[in-house]
Structures are given as C-alpha cells and as structure tokens.
Amino acid sequence: MIQYKSLLTNARYMMNHPKPKLIARTVKGYAATIISRKPRLRYADIIVHYGCNMQCEHCSCESLKDDSRRRLNPAEWGDVAKQCSALGVLTFGVQGGEPLIYKDLEEVIHNLDPNENFISIKTNGTVASKELFDKLRKIGVDSITVGFGPVPNEYDFSDYDKISRKLKDAFSLSLRTVKMIGESGIKPMMSVVIGRHNIGSNVFRGMINLAKECDSVLTCALAVPVGAWELNYDIMLNDSDRKYLNWIMRENPHVRTDFQTNWLVEGCGALKEKIYISPYGDVLPCPFIQISFGNILEEPLEIIWKRGCQVKAFSEYAPVCLAAEDRKFLSYLEISINKGKKLPISYNDPDIQSLLNTYHKERINE
Image (cartoon, rainbow, N blue to C red; front, side):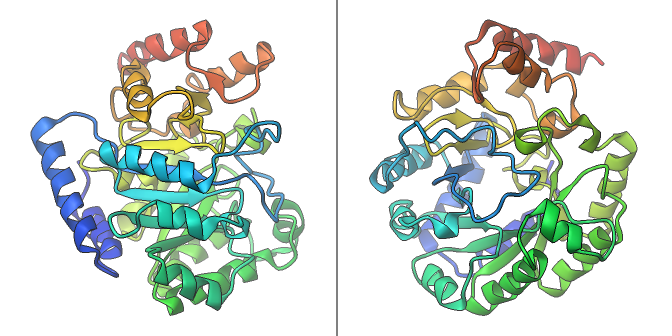
C-alpha cells in the first residue's frame, strides 16, 4: 500500500492552488478504487512533440521519433483528454522532447481542461523565463518538473554539460529554472536519472539536499536501456543498488520514484493507472516500455486501455520497474531489433504476445 507520507505529499501538491472540481473528482476516484478494487486510470503522459533544444545521451524518445508521421493537433488532444477523464485520469503530464518550445502549448493546456485536472509539465529547464511561468500559472498549470538527467559522480559539470546534455551551463540553467518556478507560484519538482554509474555519487546526495531546500520532491527516474541508451544494460541498477535507493527514500521522504504516486498500491502502475500517448497517437504503458497497444486516432482509448489491462504482464503491481530492473522483460527490445521493427513494436506481434502472456507466470513463481 502507498504510505501515508506519500499521500500527504501528493495532496500538498494538489492543494497548492486548490481546484474544487479536481478535488471532487479525486475523492470520487479514491472511493471508486477502494470499492471496486478494479484498475482505474489516474495519469496520462501527453507527448506534444519530440522536438528539443538538447541532445541528451539518455534520451528515451530517440527510438520513437518518426518525422514521417502526422502529429496530433491541439483539438485532437482535447478529445484525448475527454476520453482519459472518462476513464479516471486526474493528472496530465505534458512532455516532449521539450514542451516549452512547442508553439501550441497554451492551446493544448486549455484543451486539457485545467479547471478539472492537475496539469504538470516536464522540462529540461534551459529555455525558461519568469514571464512564461507566470503565464502558465494563470492558465492552470499546477506543477513543473525540471529534469536534470543523469547527474555526474563528482562536482565537475564539464562532461555533464558537453557530453551528457550537450549544452553549455545546462546544470546551472536548470537549477535557476527550479527557483523561478517557485517564485511564479507553481509547485516545482526535480528529477534525476539514477543508474549504476551514479547511484553513489556525491552529486546525487547533494541533489537530495538541494531539492529539500527548494521545497521540491526529487523523483528518481531509473536508468533504462532504451532510446539513446538502447541495450546498454550496464547502466541498470542491481539488487544492492536498489536496496540503497530504497534506504535513501525511507530516510528522505521527499525522494521518490513514480511507484509512490498510484491510487493505493505501491508498485509499477504501467497501463493499470498510467499511460503514455505519443505525438502520433500510439498508446504505450510508459515512456520506457515501448510497446504499442493501439493508436488513439484509430480506435477509442477505452478499448486500447482494456486490451492492455488484460495482458498478464501488467495485471499486477510489479515490485520492480519492468523497464529498468528486469532483463527478462527487456527481451522485447531484442525481439524488435532481430525482426527489424521500429519501436514502438505492436502488442500483437506473436513473439511480443508470447512474452507478455507467459512472462507473468515465470516472474511470480521465482
């Protein structure tokens, strides 16, 4: 079960600028979840485009980009939002690429109905201004997460700026943005990518303290061998690394993974509670599980979501991140490469179906 401290943190963000209709929908959602004990969506990643001003070494969307495909327009995102809300979604996470350089960002946010939903944006924090954040606050944005990416081991940011993020002064620009967000009245959040290479770093420990000083949650995104890091299994946490991260989270309640943001049960909420919708309409379990269960331009979201929930691999709340900690599950990447299929690979590929529907039994019997 989700610990009460995590629930209080979630509530603190929601109540920063209370929205009566959102509060009512949240209460209704918790009641429905407790009574029915059935899957209920809570969160949807809205990927407006893959355009970005950076070339980060860890970019997970690198493998999903396809300039030949048509992107959803703001009106279509409005229809997506209505379908999501009907299935229980309370929070829309607007992402990219870099969403702050997307020309129709304000129109998309308006179409996500910010009076009834919690609107979050994730940015790299390098193309920001106080004027922009003031405007976003006025149109209903509740929280902005600044992603710092895979922080270095020591306090030498030359390689981080030049190699990891390929932008001069990237770290200092992102840190400045966190402070500007707070000054605008929007609740800031910070995010770092944690893998075997930096789990014990001095910079990670410093970020924990820095987030606390900024009155921000620090979300740890676990390093995943997809996108620009495709099949780089050396970055993945091992069991001892994960135990250390769990200890850090117990000692520092403001540090978390996304396991602590579910309705009631702690664990992997992919598909059951959270979905990822690409700029082209593909519906994925999460940004890092690059398997498509359908396209929202071709069939209703409810059909796609129910299809995914029937897959055995997603029928429980796995205690580990399937994309970042489970080599067996990641064999879907090798299937797509061996078949020469571009990601996201379709759920109805016979080998993918076999993996998803037999893997569950193997995992729970270990």
